[in-house]
Image 1 (cartoon, helix red, strand yellow):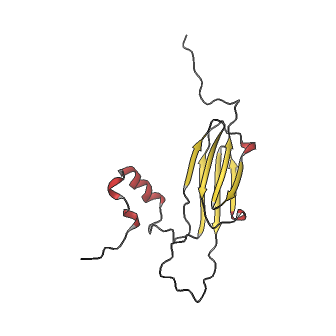
Image 2 (tube, one colour):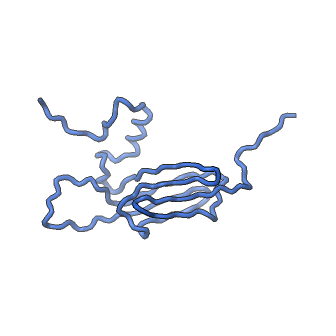
Length: 145
């Protein structure tokens, strides 16, 4: 029996569509673990009747490690986790913890009330609430005469 080295770039290859494979290729780092200059944290986006919610998975960060900027309908989330010195007594065989910088930009709908955006970091999840402006409507029904 031969041992085959695990390649995270080929994970679940057979169950993915061609588009998702291309998306992963252009978004992921080549080694699959983020050992390069940065990494891309996972983001869950949901919508309620009153707001849009973003949840960014960034364990091991501190509140001070984040920078959030809103400019012309775009929300940019960036941060940095610095590599702390290793202990001499510990021999690492493999390190998959991601260090470095990241930046994600999201194009927001016009009905987001930018003056009421709130962010909270707890238990490794950065939660960003983007309240909707109830006065602005994105869809209008146009009557044909």
